[in-house]
Image (tube, rainbow, N blue to C red):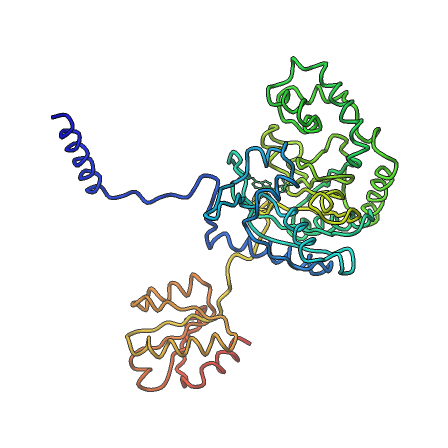
Amino acid sequence: MPAKKDEMNKLEKVDDSSKKKSKTPEHLRGFRDILPEEQAYWNLVEDTARKISTDYSFGRIRLPMLEKTVLFERSVGKGTDIVEKEMFSFTDQGNDRVTMRPEATAQVARAYIEHGMLNLPQPVKLWYFGPMFRYDRPQSGRYRQFHQWGLEAIGSAEPVIDAQVIIMLDRFMKELGLDTVVKINSIGTSESRREYVMELASYFKQFRSKLSDVDKKRLTKNPLRLLDSKEEGMDELRENAPQILDWIDETSKQNLMKVLEYLDEVDVAYELDPFLVRGLDYYSRTVFEILPVAEESQGDEESKSQSSLAGGGRYDGLIPLLGGRDDVPAMGAAVGIERVILAMKNKGVDVPKRRTVDVFFAQLGDAARRKGLAMFEEFRVSGIPVAEAFGKGSLKAQLELADKMEAKLSLILGQKEVLDGTIIIRDMESGGQEIVDAKKVVDIVRRRLG
Ligand code: AMP
């Protein structure tokens, strides 16, 4: 009977699979584990970000990873790549449409409005550090979960604020040993941009047949995006395109000039890039990106597009767009941490490799191990960097490890020493050993280390 046979087949299949060892589920594409050996880079980068944020009086804000989808639809913009195809969105158990944050500026703006920060002295300066999520095509320097350090200064339209944010990022890059250049432009206000966008669209319409499908779509939906299109042949078509600086309002132009003057004042290297626009709808006036100098002329268009280390700009319209007061301008930027670390590695920047250990604690036998736990704690509390290998039995293996860690001294505690209340101090360089009173060992070691 066919039905029965089917049942049998199913059973066999089940039996078959239960015999096989199940495969360990792997990480998702575009997501990664950051292992201990990479932490030296992360620590240095995070410490530098924290220090610079604090030096310039930015206060930290820790934001949720999950927000209502509508926050990003309204702020980042419905026609953008991020909202159209890159968001990790789902409907939660309570039937709310929610999204893993693809960026944090919209969140900071939401928080500013929600917590009535308008009542604080303006501008309110905030920084954040954390993971962002975008469903993009993964490749070197582009992940689906990546980290950003971000700065937002809300409540001032002064161009000096634009300059200050750029200066902070420039200092950050320098402190990490990177040689970078700021590409800068102004995209005016949304009103002054309107006419330019029409002009740009009519310019590209003449070449419609030469445009790729993606660019044809951009031409109808968001012609500004044609300016940073990476499609083949676009460089040539762009050459004679109208330039935004010829179309924007006087204040926008003057503000850009002021920003450049401020940057000159503190020797920040920049290049005016008339075709620089940013991917998100909410930008206005100053926009900028930071690129590593060495890579600028290298690589194809695709890899060049991955070399942007940071980007940002003014977003005077965002707070009103999200329901806040009309007169709250703002400026912000975000740094791609994985890209910064990649650039540091490419350049061979030195980072403190691992914690230095002055003293290695070696033990032999269970009694020594028990006593050792307490003695290790004594050293740790007294602030002397100490390492151990309680899991190892052989003295030889432990001393080899001490050598590898470049410990200056090893302490050796065996059965006999436990009974005598003593401990051996071994100088790892000379190999000389000395037996001392276990109770005084912390002081003796401290003196020996100078
Ligand atoms: P954006 O928020 O798109 O302005 O990006 C700011 C910075 O974040 C960029 O300059 C990159 O350094 C970094 N970034 C953006 N998207 C990714 C990604 N998918 N993977 C890694 N870094 C990224």
